[in-house]
Length: 168
Image 1 (cartoon, rainbow, N blue to C red):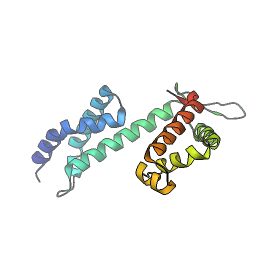
Image 2 (image 1 turned 135 degrees about the vertical axis):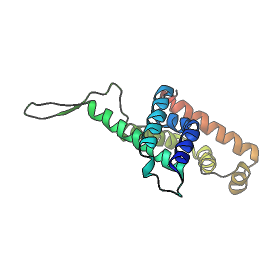
Image 3 (image 1 turned 180 degrees about the vertical axis):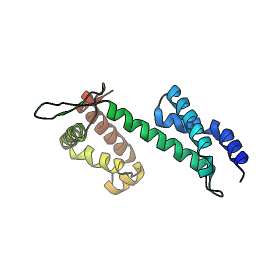
Image 4 (image 1 turned 90 degrees about the vertical axis):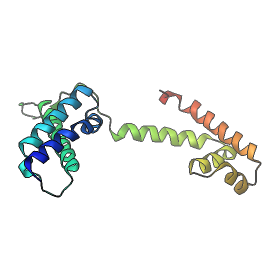
């Protein structure tokens, strides 16, 4: 493949790179900048393209690598080192990071709410949650279909009430 053909393919595929860039950056202006930087690097290093390979995948790899490198650079810029005797590393990012501790607390509350459910509504609800269809639950528990549906509904309402602090 000639250098001119590679160059034409890069420019032709530039429009299809925007959605992928947006999925990485979540900002339209940053996505446009990322596409522009990708095209620049691809044109600059077009001699590195291995003939016979997928040029679109090559471009997406360049874009992903640019995004990762920029992200790492931004994280390093937002980290401040304390030069006192204790040598703390302070992260000065303006947003809060969520960790598994929050998830563990939520799961604990969900587990407690599930324990508070009566067995007659908990069993059909758990079966439905695991993927059983209403009819399968009714046959397994030897209950009318309407009873199964109402018990699952009751379980949902009780869980919603118990976990309303997490409602958005």
